[in-house]
Length: 203
Length: 289
Image (cartoon, rainbow over all chains, first blue to last red; front, side, top):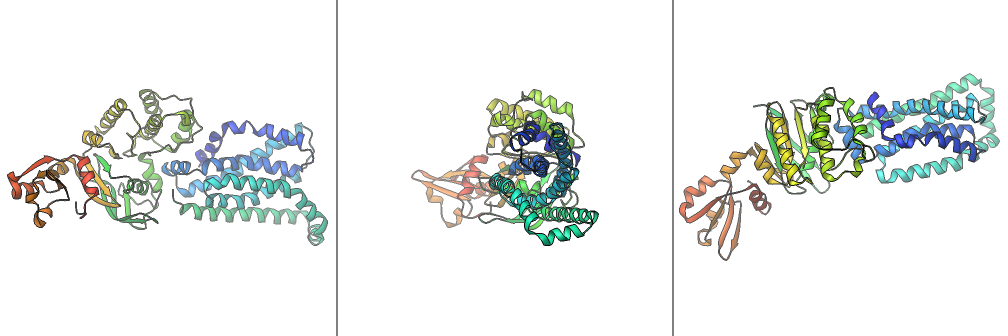
């Protein structure tokens, strides 16, 4: 399992060199970006990139010919994504701190929650989609996310008074718990679905 | 004699192709060559062996075990070489070793670097810069470095120059010497088989035509030449396929002894090469080769 997780780093060594410059770029050239979005982009970077590599039929043939079960391959994807998410967010936090870009722990927590939700939807899709369409899907996803994130959050802030009222009336701890439970729950369900799909996949 | 691989009534259907009621045994300690035209089902068979595909019906056993519940153990003891590159193209061999080696309990770095040296492979160049032959050698080095008991190769000699092909066959033969290993490989180059195979498995249009020792095949099959006057409905039944020309006929039989007894001096009987068998079997009307 550890080997499979480590593999994600080996296959994208060169792209990883772009990781910190990417965050610095976001800090300087997109100053209005919410830190949440920066954390979210950072957290998905490694796993999304690894996915693009592993979506190739050849990579699947290799991994499935090595002594790994399909269950393990999916499990390492889901667990690895968490490991890389934590490392990436920590790194991004460091970069933002050093560049004096203001953020709060809350931003990190929200990004983690969003990461779980985003991954929960994206991962099974990647297993269903043909490799050729994945690049397009990632591109569209990123654009939609980038364009839609801030208007959406503004929309929620302004109009969803019902939700806001509910949020205000509920204690912060409960709120965190509900958020955490929902996103982690989705992630676990997604894991089951991916495993189901991958077991039946033909190479 | 023990079977390393056993297919029992395996059926796998695709939209435009199917493997039907396939029975196959690969004997431990021998080299089995796997032949058949393009699209005959060789790659499908090999994918079933690696559990990349699952059979619709029937059972596939490797080392006497089912894949269900034993996948890791089976693959631990298998080496594989595919007909196209399966390694991450942008990585060099050093990095690929970092991914492949820890997957096997029995991985041996010394053996690996030894093969890299014999195969003259660069460790620091991306796989995508490799020629087809080099890619093949790279997969071979990976397949041979974890002391696999069963090595499965899909057209390993394709794309190799004749000199290295011969060296490779020698290496494979050396590997077989201790009698513990089993080798199964597909090829279109029938001279490779004549050189190292003990058994020959012949597949055509998703059906197994034969799975016999090389001597058996050479004994049974023959090319028969003679004048067309001896051909009638009865004698034609003796042949797998008959080709007529203005000079006479040429036909393939799988019962050379019977032909000799029946037709004797009236025909010329020549040894059939594997290529002859492949060629004639392709156009045959009856498929009981």
